[in-house]
Amino acid sequence: MIEQREFALSAKKRGFHLVTSEVLGNLPPLPGNGLLNLLIKHTSAALALCENADPDVRADLASIFDRLVPENAPYYLHTFEGPDDMPSHAKSIIAGVSLSIPISEGKLNLGRWQGIYLCEFRDYGGPRKLVATIIGE
Image (cartoon, rainbow, N blue to C red):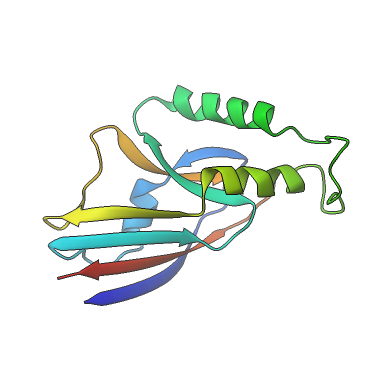
């Protein structure tokens, strides 16, 4: 069985946001065993798996990414969409635009402290479209 759903995550401010529940709320019932692939259809946001308990991790990641890829670097050529645009593209490539998560016994088989993050790199990114592909038995 293969099923595909496209949905949008609600607009979020710049930062790292735990969206596991929002993603699950947009999926059909999961098969007993299988695989969930998530793709974000944007070039200035990303998906990641990380700490689901301490919100300080999300704040620290935002600080790390902003320091790693600063705005207004003098060597950027792509600048006409604002100072957060080119850094957002670079951050998206670094973090990645897709996740593959095993499904076991009808649930996402994540580690105890793992959650799905929306990494929003724009100041005003708006709703973010995702494609979920579920492969299962």
